[in-house]
Image 1 (cartoon, rainbow, N blue to C red):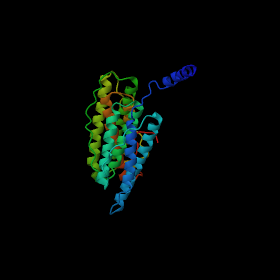
Image 2: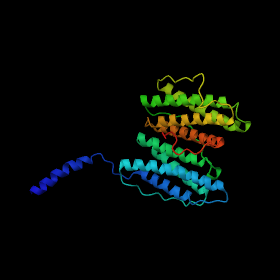
Image 3: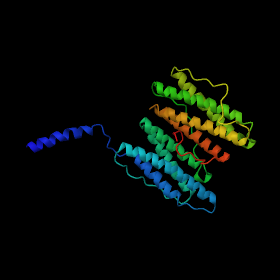
Image 4: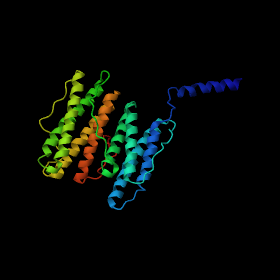
Length: 300
């Protein structure tokens, strides 16, 4: 009897330590498994030219970064592993691109209800998959974000409003930078520049509307912005828009990690992804390496 009572007394604090512990399977473990599988698959792809092998190697580099970042969070949470995903076989860049699209879709779905720290990681993984797919048309054409205007379902907190002000400021800067570089880039880029400008206009207007509807005064555009280096030719012009798109991606990621509103999170990951894809294309044109950005918006 005495031994039983002693054991029972010891069991009480042990049970208390587990109070509130989430012992459900961790969905991020499945994403980490998929990333590791994509790395192995990418490394098996061979082609008739160096471009195929180089593209596959670049995808592998991106997915290595994803696997490591996701596994760090899985290890931190210390929850049971989820069932590994069943993945389609990879035989070429097209099937590898399909796997990237599946991974991005899964991350986007999870981030809508994830805790804020996980929402940021998931958004960066989704945008990183889009960046990798932007390397080569053989990986498949990425879906263009709809950018449906966000309609927050409740009052936004100071953190979300502050982050949205920063995103708006980055949209002002991006528009100014694109207008600057048009004089330095060949006419062949006019269409892509015009599409980017239209997109940033829409994002600027959306951020302005949400802030105004929330009773905040939207930040105004500065008279001018400083590019990372003087713009004197096409390469420095491309680097200027890479910097602007990178800043925009970072600030929109900041929005979605400071709100639990599904509408604003969806808009944030769309903006993060679109700016990342633009930056990837410009990095490739400028000869910047690596062209693909593994975890956009996250500190290096």
